[in-house]
Length: 288
Ligand code: ATR
Image (cartoon, rainbow, N blue to C red):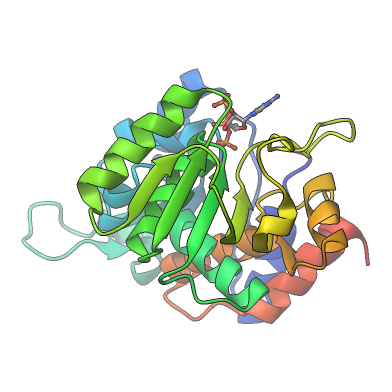
């Protein structure tokens, strides 16, 4: 987990809030996820973040799923909740509210803060309102699926889904048609212009990666703005090409920031110091 930027972001926020908690990164094999969560529960951790490949596995490993995790089908944030007397009919409370020495039972509750972070980052970083826009989404892996569903829930007008493995895009399109019938969803490249193109593939992470779309079938001149979920490097070839076409661009650092801010609010019950977190994240990822 040496590459994770989350400890820098969260520890800066915890210091700012005056909380004597620490955010640490652990490398956990998927086969050990259940054990790791049990260990954290036994040790009365305040909470945990999970990243790929644990986000789907965690659906089966947490005791209770928050509405957000149920709706988006993945868990990236865990909150440990307790009771003093397990037999009593009182609400479960976050462990921060209880005296650890008196806690008699702890349960694990899974949330998803990624989905809302995608919307917040695209809207704030690009200065757009997603409702009623037409969007081309590249990629139908874990991140692509969450983005597609959340964009549909946000009320985009048109969603074009493209993925190397076409069946995965088709399966998400079918799910959107069922859950969000007002959205016009199709697989394949759009015939004309779209308001926004989003890269949710991993193409661009490595320097020699090709563009995440087929340049014979789509040009960035067809889009109004471009968003790349990748944040390292800061400018992928996809964003560079969109910038050359004079389109507004944003990378995925905002997604990382807002999913973290929302997680911290769940754990702490307090507003996250977003500017502090953004500065710590930028310094860590791009250097001071
Ligand atoms: P994540 O959870 O970050 O979304 P993932 O589920 O492995 O990771 O998804 C990676 C995405 O990048 C997928 O859309 C993947 O396409 P496939 O579904 O066909 O695997 C896409 N991707 C990865 N390498 C690719 C490549 N060389 N060419 C095209 N798409 C690629």
